[in-house]
Length: 114
Length: 107
Image 1 (tube, rainbow over the protein chains, first blue to last red):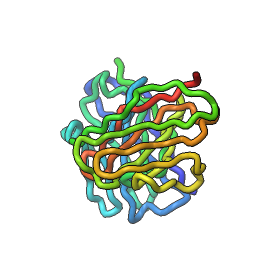
Image 2: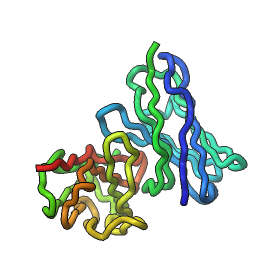
Image 3: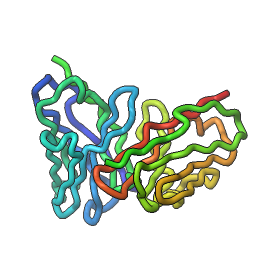
Image 4: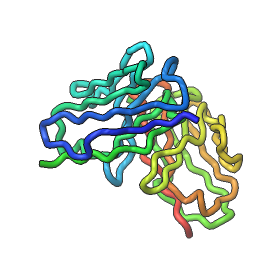
């Protein structure tokens, strides 16, 4: 059974960079697309971007200037960096597999506050 | 961007009711549509992909239909564990986008 687990700081200061990692277990990391999705408290879901096992990335234009997603196949993990954060970036951040998100992590709440 | 519009945004239903949720895309997306169930404090759970294909382990009371711009998710007989928020999502083109959600509550 494929499992995804997010990890990273739960509190980030405004203007700093949010960093999260997602570890994949129970399945291959190759030949899949790996996405980050976020959900502000009480609101809907927003796709942030994906990375393919080849390293190809695709980002949501609304966040593209601030987002970097990277992949470490040897460690079976991929990471999210979101720069210049503001309070509007406070959200639960999920990692998920493929274009129709068949597997999800449990989510990591990241609060942006000084 | 493709806008996904769900209706209703919320509904009240009784145990045993048949419930239908609609999702409309702002442009044609073929059958590249997925449905998710989310309970409070939990990650979304994949129910359906390809508009009508049931994910492994999802009970057959859930069904999806549609293609192009109009889609539906049906729960044939609502049970207590089905009270949740449901989201549709298109994966026809980037950026991938979600509907605003439909909250299913107990009447």
